[in-house]
Every structure is written in C-alpha cells, then in structure tokens.
Length: 520
Image (tube, rainbow, N blue to C red; front, side, top):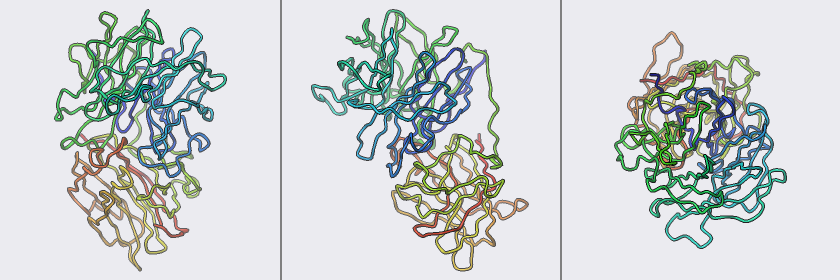
C-alpha cells in the first residue's frame, strides 16, 4: 500500500487553503512580510506539489514597505466558482489594523487582478462560500456583546456582492468556538456536505494549544451546534516532547473518488521545543461517522508516514540542488524581504550570475535590503554559495545569511578592511551583535557554506573548488532561528545579501551558484 511523508510541503508554508478543480488541486499559504506574496501550489495527487508561482507578485498588488516582521499577509483562502479563481486574505499593518481584500484570475498560473478592498470587514482570516447563487464572506471579530475572556472571538457571516466588491445585508454571528479556554477563534471555512452546513475553526492560538474544531447547522446563517467530540484535531494533549506540535488551521477537501482529507499546519521540533522551520503544511485522512468528520481515524493525530490518497501518483521533477542562475527569471522558491524597491538585482548584467547591487539598507532594519532568500525546508541541511565580490570601501559586505527576522539572524559575509579581505560570521540575538569568527581571505572570490544538523550549525569557506572546505566556526547554536526565541509567525530563510551598511555604493556582488540540500 502506497504511503506518503508529512509534511507534504515542508518549511515555512503555514495556514494552508486548498481547493479541487476537476482532477487538479491548488493550495495557498500565508507569506507575511515576504514578497512576492501568497505562494501558489498545484498537485494531481494531494501529496506531490509543485509551486506555480505567487498570487501577489506585483508591487501594485502588495505594498510591504517598512512592514514589521510577521505582519503583512495572513491566512489566505482560495476558492473557485464558474471559471473564476478567488483568493481572499488579510493585510495586517504595523498598527495591527486588519484590511481584507480579494483578487481573481481565470488561470491560476497567470496574472491575478489588483486587490478589491472590502469595507466594514473586521477581523482576520476571511473565507468565501458559494451557495445556490449567493456568496458569503466569513471571518472573525470581537463579539458584538464584548469579550468574555481574553482573545474571545466571534465567527461571523455576511453576504458579499462580488460584482460590486462589497459586503451586503446583515452580519450574523454564527459560532464562538468549542470551549472558552480555546481562545482566538479564527481561520473559519464553511462547507455544505449533504444537508448540513459545516464551519471549521482554528482555536487556541497558533502555538502549542492550537486545535481544529467544527460545528454544523441546517441553515448557513445558523444556529450552529458544536461537535461533542471537539476538537477534531490537536496535538496539545500529546506533550511538548512529541515531534509534531501546534497542529491547527484546517481545510477539508473531497477527492474526485469520494475520499475526504484535511490539510492543516503544524511544526516539527528540533533540539527540544524549538521550531526553526516555522509552521508547515501537513495532510491527514478523514472519514465521516454520524455526519461528523473523524480526522486520522483510529489514531487521532498527524503522522510522519500515512497511507496515500486513492489517486494516481503524480510526481513532479525535483528541484536541483544547485541554482546556477543561468535563466532570465528567479525560481519561485526565492523571495525578497518586503516589496523590492530599486533595480538592485539582475540575472542579465553578468550572464550566469545573480548580480546584486549593494543597498545602504541593512538586514537589521525594517526595510528592503538587498536580500534574496529561500526557506529552510529540512531540520538538517547544507547550503553553499559561490561569491565574487570586490568591496570598494570599508563597511561593504556580501555573503550568505540565515534569517528569522531583523533581530535574530546570522550573517556570514565577506568584507574589506583597508587593503585586506576578511570573512566574518556575525550573530544577531535580541538585537545585539557579536562576532563568532573571522578569517583573512586572499581575494574577492570565495565560496561559503553552512551545514546544520538540527541546532548544530557549522560554517565553512574555500577560495577554490579544488581546495577543501576550511572551518570558520563549528557547533554554533542555531536555536536563535526558532520561533520560540525569535517570536512571530514565520520560519528561517537562507539568503544572499549585499549591503553598504548606511552608505552610498556602486559596488556589486555576483553570486555564481547557490546549493541547498536536505540532510538525513
């Protein structure tokens, strides 16, 4: 019997929303302060996914200027109706004000529209539900009668006129979750299955007490009755040593063969309760008993290995370990930190290289530095880059970085001091910096590597591929890259970086290749 491995999409890809259109499955996740926004995936078997690109890939769609870490784009929902794809989501600004909007496309791999912003749509995690010619918007809000306990939220429903881009009619409070202790009701999705309307909700916050609950009604507007066996999925009762934690934010999907499955987020831990990869996308089977769903029947939890859906296996070509920058476009695995401003990178100015012009902005600032990164996707990995860089002045740097946010990261960079080239490894922890190691280098061509075994990170360099790797720093503690120390809702990025650190510069850094590979 064929099985699959969880997570089905590894690394920082949280809040999955999934639809089936015929025999095709499409999935989107949150992206927060990273650009392009809302990564979009496609699958034929719900297990093997390829990234088509991003839904919000133009500055006109997404302005992330100066957005704080873990603000920006939260919890998108993807839907399809009569030839049109819809993606609806929340943009959270630095004042934590929530702005909800949707975009549309007729081809999910093509261009999506500019946002349609919705007025009087409080809360986060919007979703759309199409029902007999009407369309309903759902989200969360502070209960109209006030909060009875901390983070007490109300799931509400209102009709939406998509032709006019506005909410119409009355708002209805439809459910406030399963238990008062399970705060932060959010991530609601509505389905009609048989004669019942179901609403699934994420509760308990997105940390260790995260959970998925469900209620049902004969009328879309309620009243809804909660399932007596709630929550239908959580790991909070399994303890903090269980290797899969903070399970929640689910989406139900029915296959063309009549099977039911649930996508959700969860995190893998490493070296204790530390979650460097952030929240990832997992998959679990569902059956129905007495018109209620049972997730992972007989086990009641996510597993690393599970029997695969009854669908023809459809694998895609695996990404190569090496990115050689020979194309004219970046692979969709790459992101910028906030909306890119200025023409600071090019794949054509020096063919076969990714050229980055040094910007004055730094990784430690709430800005758009010269940074291009990809997610860490394995608990253990190695990443390496070949760099050609001749800094023109002291203070100019370029190299490889491991980033969780502005105040928690590592910078492994080549710099200039007088007439010398020097490699430096800088740790930034809680906004304070210290140098972990340095080495004089005999030129501006160098290769840099980091090798991580769970939280044990070692940094290497070499000046020619024929030479062996030399150790700069060994056994560096990587826990500062975890959500548990760095805070927020994102995961670790591995990136390419170039900065003149507050000064004007005409220098460039050329990256010849980048390698990323998971380790067992």
